[in-house]
Image 1 (cartoon, rainbow, N blue to C red):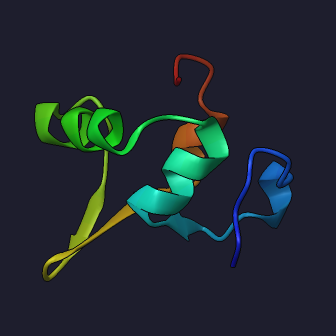
Image 2: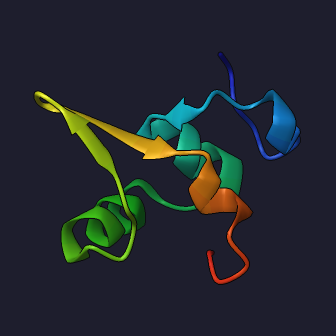
Length: 63
């Protein structure tokens, strides 16, 4: 899926890659990975893959 800032929240997949998350919010790659490393961005890990739940975007205190 090609995610952009114009993509509707309901059209996003339930789990986003860091790249999709970055594109949706307009953040830099380094910023997203720093948020993941610091624990400020909750993620799900499957092996070496990192996924960000869409519900993170629904929280009022999120980015």
